[in-house]
Length: 81
Image 1 (cartoon, rainbow, N blue to C red):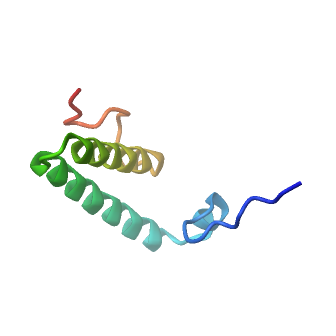
Image 2 (image 1 turned 180 degrees about the horizontal axis):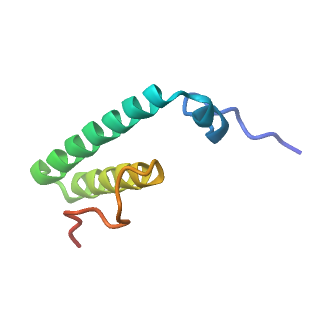
């Protein structure tokens, strides 16, 4: 049986739980920054593929913030179809 390759970077749930509350605030801050950047990129994109990738990033940031208890709804505020 082949083993899966080791992941580089990232945080496992166990490692994330071991971090202190100050780290959580930093993570929330960085996710919010990334989400704002993705939103701007989506608005300024000239290629549909870039716009779609930026929308996916924005949605994933929203979901991560939701998992951290930072947002109340599952659907992003300005989510457009």
